[in-house]
Length: 80
Image 1 (cartoon, helix red, strand yellow):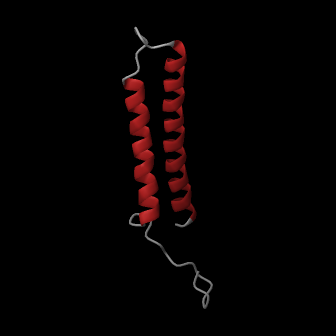
Image 2: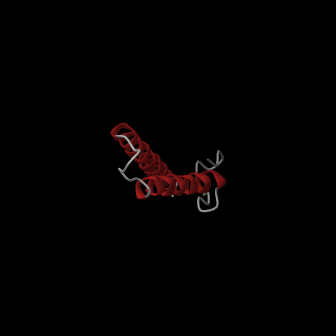
Image 3: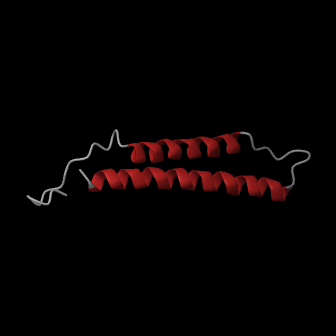
């Protein structure tokens, strides 16, 4: 915030390392969740408990990725 004039300084959020890192980390979480779901098969040697645990891990990856993307979207919207 510009203290002399009471205006906010414009920040370029497209090149801000913090927001860019959160956006990329969200994409990596989404990719990891997709990879877990894609390779998940209930066959010989895989118990129901392990299958459900893998589903929960993938779900947490999707939630974390979505949370990071939403956080970046809200942060950029609030500062435009």
